[in-house]
Length: 462
Image 1 (tube, one colour):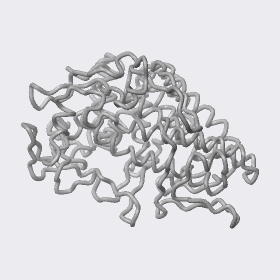
Image 2 (cartoon, rainbow, N blue to C red):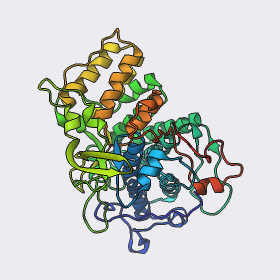
Image 3 (tube, rainbow, N blue to C red):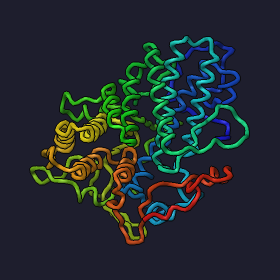
Image 4 (cartoon, one colour):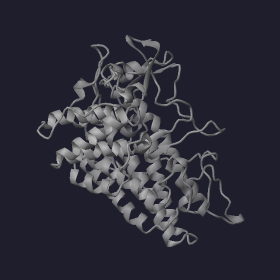
């Protein structure tokens, strides 16, 4: 968080729409914090705003795959990198160990970039008050999203939340407890809502195609509310979940696959300078699905597996590494340009099912579960009733979240942890461990004296 920000922006993805005069020409591929805070232009601000999307996209694979390994959705059996087995399945996890950075630096650089954008926007007389409000609403929403990813990775360790846009030295921001981290995320999302409501009809920059249907302040607000519903699910503020969902894009009016997939996505391309989806591994060479994903899928009436299993995993070549093997290839991402979901309607319906159950609307919860089972999984209705126990409902909920949200964001790891079911995750070998969280990166630990409790020590797992 002390490092000056640099943002590399592939031009194939991000078209700047803000106008600028000839004397406002800047390095639009690499705007720095200095350019944002000392000599901002509409072009610099637009580029930096779009750069936050590059940060989010860059972290997508980390959450999907690395958190997916910790949550036993997938394995990475890359023959050239044995640490993907040793480091993630055996451990222990240590600051400075393999893969422990987990996007920490990138996420905080993105958050800090947002602070620079907000500072710059205040200085720009060429932006209208309405445009500034739209920009603020966008930035705070994306900052909240970036904070959430790190909150989930580090769980009870807490996080620093004071992120300045200024460069230079100084003491690292203090680490605050988990409750304060989540309160800050909610604050950002709620402040963003106010800004977006005052943000007019367009943003002063262009959002990429993954935001189709959510690319104006009014429609982007529905994305913001969907994120807030996700956040409040993790804090079990179920009344708040219901309120946020009412303003989101949740939709059960039709029963098509398409309606379940409505949402916001990271997008990729093979164009020069752009990024491809690294989770695409058709052969596969490294990424395989944990065998239990297909083995534990429920059966349809014709005895074929849950459509969510058969459409996302298929039998392929067997890969093996250090006693871990699988013959299931990932078929969720079918090409190098397959999009990756940030949040979809299918998740929102399952979020509502959870909130409804724990606020007393048990039949509504069952209806939502059955909507997903039937229309996404091709299954019959769930074997739960309003008389079922909370434990029985959670088992049904987690089954559906596992298959509906597979390999999207590490959901299974977060879900089993928040319902105290980490022990249900797969262990291919007796020496394997299940880890509840990841410690801080070594650089963050070295910079702090005293070091935050438990954040800079070995995590042994169970």
